[in-house]
Structures are given as C-alpha cells and as structure tokens.
Image (cartoon, rainbow, N blue to C red; front, side, top):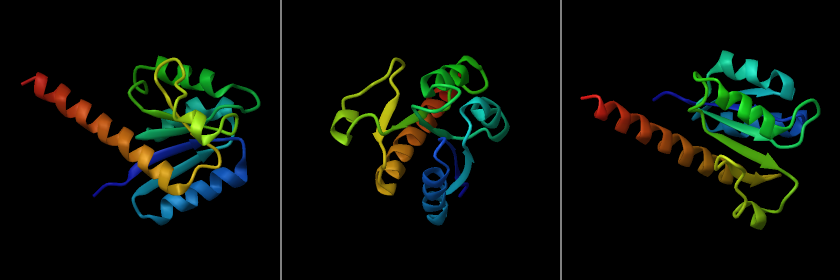
Length: 137
C-alpha cells in the first residue's frame, strides 16, 4: 500500500513539524513541510502531494493566493487543499468555505480531524479519477 503524500505549508515551524511527525507516525503518510509561503508552489511542483494542508495567514503570501497559484497550474490543479487557520473557531470552520470550495480546519486541529479530512479528500480524488478513466472506455 502506498503512502498518501501530504505537503504542509505553514510558517509556524514547531506546529508544522509536530503535525508532520503525528502523520508520519501512523505509517500511512509521507510528509514534506514548507515553512515559506513564497516557496510553496515550487515545493508542490517538486513533491507532487496527494493533498496540501495550507495555513491561511503567512508572511510573504496569503494562503488563498498560494492556493490559487497552485490551482492555476494544470499539473497541480487537481490536488485538494485543506486550509488550516487560527482565525476562526472549530464551529465556524464547519460553515466556512472559501471561494473554490476549500475546507477549513481550525488550529490547532486534532490529528484525528486532520487525518479524517485528508482521507475524505483523497478518497474523493481517487473516486473522481476512477470515474474519469471509466469514461474513456
């Protein structure tokens, strides 16, 4: 079974490394961390993750800008993005949807919630890919 590739983009080095360690400890994820919003696009192109966990407020570039840059690239646009933010509470994130339908998780998000969200997005992407390949038959 191949591991799900996760790119964490967050300027908080301690929080992003802690989340990466938690995900890696499960044995189900290969994780890369990028602490610079301005380097996120290049890291995504290099790593080709299955999903991106993206902080909203970072110096140098806004998480929304990073998301739109990633989705403007045809080779990256199908990668699901899950926003992490401390700007809203867990209750508010359940109702928050940024333009484009991105999911929000409030920080600090529990490891279980993050994994649940990743699984939901990756399964959705796999299902979409399977349907697209069946259409070509």
